[in-house]
Length: 334
Image (tube, rainbow, N blue to C red; front, side, top):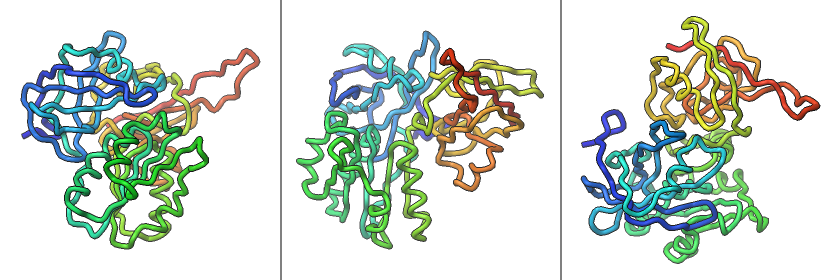
């Protein structure tokens, strides 16, 4: 059986592609080693970024197709690390390398009640959970947050399936989510599952802690490419190893260091496990923490970071020419 540490790789044929929202493409795959998928599972995919191989993770939004097919949905964004551009170029008949479905975000069946929170493309990790809870007759609410209805994939289908259990919060309709009110309305013994942008999840985590709710009742997954600042190139140095590299806006610091031959420890590559954390020795930069591994208290000193998702951002003012010096980060690795 595959797990996140020893995944089973296989070939998969692209069966169909379809735009399901603004910038979001649904991709149906037929793997050579099909098996049923569980809510919260994802597949790793080998992609090409500027001709170089890389691995990206995508939630399985639907694994109930006949013939063992599964569907993922990919949001194309210029601020991504390049995988979405490759995935949006796929056409039916193409061959991909993917893992068997991997589980890092399991749904625990048997809780008294559930709140499922999805922000944007995070619905891909949450939709299957909602469908299972509906089939089980569980007590649940599905909260879906998006910039506009046109950008919210599967909104009509989810509304038809879940009825008044679904609450959509649409920013451009004045329906922005009140995080404090959401958390205040969660039953003491409920479990909340969420996937979405780091700002949304940070706000929920803070409100959850302030209310004193059980930490084990809050479960989440992040897609790791959303932060407080726009991604920009920066310089990373490891004096002990004599390494200096420029981290491009479309790659992670982890990937840049691996490109330079640095032996790095990592696992999830989504800012969840903390295995890739590095020590910050000096910085001419602000740290854009994009992980969910550190608490707010741990992030505050700026002495460590998860290099698979977090970034450095220049703190220098913009010059009259419209440019500013690159951020410089000096680190050490385990």
